[in-house]
Structures are given as structure tokens and as C-alpha cells.
Image 1 (cartoon, one colour):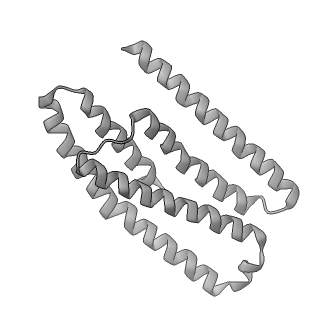
Image 2 (cartoon, one colour; image 1 turned 120 degrees about the vertical axis):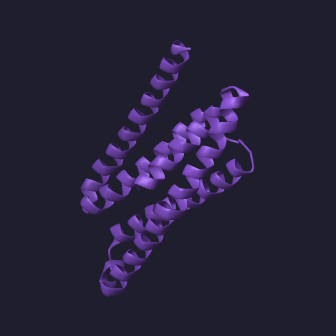
Length: 162
């Protein structure tokens, strides 16, 4: 998770380097590409592979977990996290080619998707009863609202700072 959180921060810095002078851009872009590559290839992707293998092995050892509805919901959120991972991989490849499709603000919002998926996975595991599901989803929705308010407030702060 730490790799997924940090990689998007690097994307933001990488894209914001476009607002710098040409000399600064020529220094920053290769440095961010190197940092992204090392983080992705040495930490994030191996951790994802190990996590998926450990989860699959856990399910192999405890097949009765497939009978529980909450496990299927958790698996759905984990698949969402894997999709998030591979979209980040695509962003890395685009940035290496000098393709900047995302704005830094869009990436700030994108960064919070991983946070929401993490909270959702934890909520599903902890809150297994039907009544608690309602509270869990309300909590997740409230977290999403708070994150969006925080992003908007930060955007206003940055605009005033300029």
C-alpha cells in the first residue's frame, strides 16, 4: 500500500515539474522517472505479487472462506486495488514517453482512490454482520466526502499561495 500511495505522489511532482524552467525540467524529469521506476520495480510490484500469492494461499488453506459473503466483497475490492495498480503502471509508461494526460489535481483525487479501497477492505473484514455493513458503507461514504473536501481546500490554498 505504501508503494501505491507514494507512486502517485511522485506522479504529481513529475507533472508539476512541467511548470518549472527548462533547466529544472531537464533535471527533474529524469530523476522522477528513476524514482518511479525503482519504487515500482523494487517495492510496489513485488509486494503486490507477494500479497496476491499469500491471499490465494490463505484461500487454498481455508476454502470455507468462499462460503462467506464478506469474502466475496473483499475479493471484489482487492480486484479493484489490482486494477488501480495496473492503471498506475500505465501512467508510469506514459510519463516515461513524455505523455502527460493527467493534471496534478486529477492525480490528487486518484491518490485517494487507494485510500478508499484500503478503508473498504478493512471495513469488510472487520464489519461482517449485515447491520454493520450499513455503518461501514456510511463510514466509507463519509470518508470519501472528507477526502474530497480536503482536496478542494488544498487546491484553494495552493491557488492563494501563488
